Length: 218
Image (cartoon, rainbow, N blue to C red):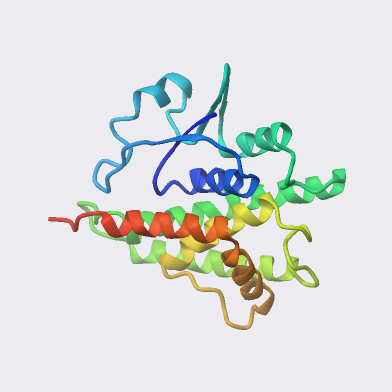
């Protein structure tokens, strides 16, 4: 297997964690990225393999799989042990729901913070109201997840793709100043449990090391 990823791509991080949890051997190709140009110019193999020119892209023999959600499903089918999806249809639906929640509800707010806090200031200046609104949205999503974790160690009882997706996004939010309220004890306990897993810990450490290696803006 070959995996094309971005060094700080949150969607790539989801796949890297799943691969580490399953103990799958892959040849990882990290595409170029800079704060100023982002992923431009796109990696030529990614352009050839994915019409959307986005990572992650998984190549397994003659099979090419694009999009982190589809890759996670594919990995589960070809490497079912250890499982990252529940056994029952209802459980798998719940897991997919949380993965979708991370991608479609949490990530847009994270992206607003990335553009307003992390990337170099644009010519027109920053928009503090956009960052404030993103943090407010994330606070509401924190409360949703805290309620979903009542009586549960993980989002679907056993650790899986829903936890991976939500943890990756919320961890990015933490680095950008979106810290869950201390009263959300279920959420904080879950964050600690997820963060203690070697695959999660190593992924966060790798992304943080890459960010620390970025030269300061001139």
